[in-house]
Length: 445
Image (cartoon, rainbow, N blue to C red; front, top):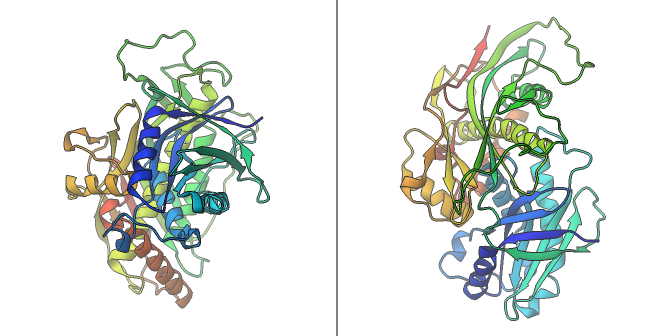
């Protein structure tokens, strides 16, 4: 039996509008949440047009011209703007009858390309029972006929399976929210035996170890430790009868406690020539559907938001350094970077809020442009909710010269970043590092 996707009713109108504006085809992403019982689609977002396409609402005439890398880069940027519990769970294409025949093959390639890209960046591993099906939605622009199929992204040889696509009004109007602030204090040693100090690689390794600590932490929901298989709202009632309401749970994360008796700490003596210190606090948020969600689902969504928001901001910091300081700069003096603030933005008809990051000197207009470009959503200035305070990043890197191999890697990264910048993500203006009261320190002996 195939999967069933419950879809926000407004998405039907959005897809219909796209079918009349863009010919002969238009692609985009499906955003929502997967669960063991049912899947939810709460947003559809068209692929941003390239510069040459902005002059008119037209696409290349053949499906062979679909830019897989462009769509994948868009999915990577959008995934950074999603709070815990939400993910890119599929792709869609609206095409003329002449192109519909080959649409599924194109969608399949895109789905696996996106999954490969997102998996490479993750610091967490999917659970064994986790849903690995992703949706491929095909819409005929002439007849409006919808065909939905799924592919198992864990199986490279996966064939298409039929799926149901059912519209539902006010689908995400009263989802449940879990909020927490996590204090972070990560010390990452730089070994003296290392041939060169790749700050990004060492930071990634340190975050990998830290993410395992988050995975093993104890989560208190409204002051209580709850069993994984109990319902999140057991013994509670949804507050109020407003059309768009959110039940918010306050969560405390106890990172010093382990949930298993088999976990043991070991000490290692290492000769180091420097260290990276990440210290501060991050604002985290996750959303879960209101159809009797389990505690396990909610906690898992919040864990991933904690890990993702720190990892994403680290990645963006190094991208920013490459763009602003160049791949060939070998010696860095001690410098300060303005830290990004996490912000949340609502969208119409939903209690769920989307996320982004903001430099202190970044204009509101730039944030608004980014939401239009990435999520095809207009945002009012008064709807931008800053979740964190402003602070600075202190970086004092090593003085050793970068070897030729590292320079080539940086140059390649710069080229890729230019591609991403072209689709409307100005990395330098998007972010730097971590959240409120956060500092990034590097010390070398």
